[in-house]
Length: 463
Image (cartoon, rainbow, N blue to C red; front, side):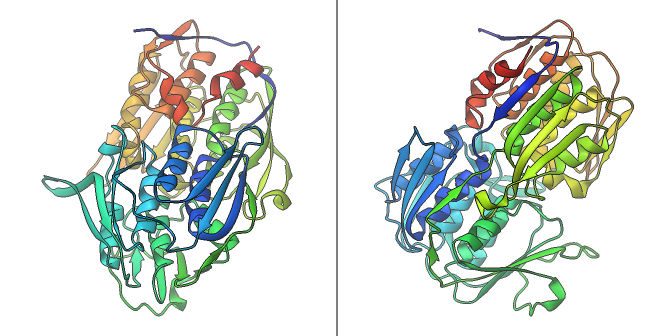
């Protein structure tokens, strides 16, 4: 086995320009495909997940071209019911966004489709999305496991859509992918579909649907006439964010849209620029959607010197965007509450690295969803960081899970594993660049899932 070697860097200095946000880019392909007209998606990131979204909708009969020189994808939409039955199963790779959101769209198509996945996604739970779609009227078959005390479903999944029913759905788990699948299915409903969140999740789907002229609104629960509750949240837990979409209306392409830089990708530069001395990085054109900026808020709370250089709302028309300047800082421990987790769920691995370099104790509450990502990230990160000398404990109860990190210890290079997970791999590269000695990572090819030019960009600013 060949290992990737990482040695301590003295500082980072310079500027980086990141390709588009993975979550937004996947959504742009899906929504453009079911709209009327051609959509030019600019600053498209050619990572594995986004390219699998492209391949998926090509298989479903949509014409899509890729202008690599201009970093633009052209999607020729056929309208809500313009998808075609594929010749065989459709492979979505390990893209959870593509898998779950496409299920929402296929709920409204009058033909069966089988979606197959890569090894990682085949182990991720799908009942959270298949259950509400069944309640809307989709016919779904999946791989079912029955392990007491619960039943769970996994890919591959076969779905046949048709006439769908409007529902009001209280989310039992905070998931932007599940919310998005229901809203996309709601496009095919005669009437209103409502999704109620106890904790607000990223709202890229709602923003993009508005750009494509969908009738989607955010309302406060007391103003709703609840026709049918198909899930009741625990007693005392009220809906904090309610999205209402009115279906049976064609989407209209805006002609073009610009994907802002991925804040999840930016987080690795933010943390390294903070924990290495004498550092300063300018990160340009980053998505500043409030439902995604939890990593900035938490790092600033810990003492990070991060400044937003300017907003550029006119560029994207649907997502706020700006430049970030980060400088070396002395970090202090903090508490991240459960309600903050959805706004930084993908950034928790690199935040764990930051906490190791902070003075004092940090607590990350309500982190159970880390267990069902591409890998068990609680295990992968805590195991790796302990090998480097970090003081990390995981406290688990039947209802909650917490990670406690006592910062201030000097991390020392060690042999660590990526566990085949892109965010674990990138987090360990950052930890190795700030640790004493040499760090050996077993495999980093998984980074291509979300950030194929990660290493080249880091090399451009490392000194």
